[in-house]
Structures are given as C-alpha cells and as structure tokens.
Image 1: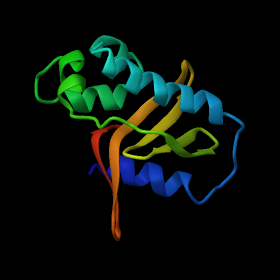
Image 2: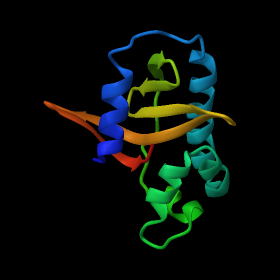
Image 3: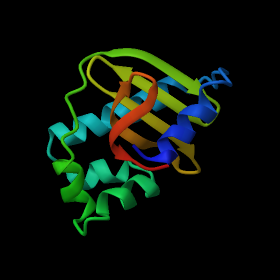
Image 4: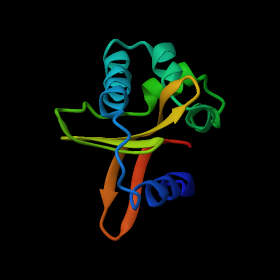
Amino acid sequence: MSITVALLVAAALPSGCSSGNDDAATRTAERLHATLQQEDGAAACDLLSDDAQEQLTESGDLCETAVMDAGLPDTGRVVEVKVYGTAAQVRYDDDVVFLGEFPDGWKVTAAGCSAKAGAPYDCQVQGG
C-alpha cells in the first residue's frame, strides 16, 4: 500500500463536498474495467494517472502488459460513488477505484483496492 493512496484517501474523505462529477468519475472507472475485459492494455493505461502508470512500469514491463498482469478484479455493480473536489472513489461489489481530476479529465489513481481493518486501502494498482 503506497503512502500516496493513503494520503489521497485521508485528504479527500474529510472534505465531503460533491463537485457534481459523479457521472464523469464513474464513467472513467467503468471504462478502465471495460478495457481490461477487452484485453486492451494500451487503452487501460491511457485511463491511469502518470504516477499509476509509473508504478506499474517499475518492474521494467510496459504499462500495457503490467496493467493486464495486475490481476484487477471484475467489478460487479457500482455500490457507491463519492466525489470530493478533484478526488473520487467508486466502490463496486468487488473493487474500489480511486480517481483524480486532471487537466485532461478524470484518471484512475488506484484500482483493485480493498479495505483493511484499521489500515488504509491495499491496492493492486496505485499512484497519485
């Protein structure tokens, strides 16, 4: 679990102000999982923040390969969407996806996340 994800969660959650971008953030999270199901690693990487892409490529693999090998779960249905200014959390039955709003739109900053009792989220893909 990266401190970046912990800081994102800690910084975003207390503010509680919705920016009205629930649909845009959800569409980005949905597109990420759709591209993974279509086995389109390049398209999936385009939806990730620069930091998330960098984290995936630390092992020397291309982002397109690493994101497909990350083992992200099938999502199930959307359970809850929270938007806090320029940060969002899309909670599914079997996944939690964190997003940030960047100049070029919403990007996934962490995915394949699960809550750990008394600890921040543990994410298979993480960045900032």
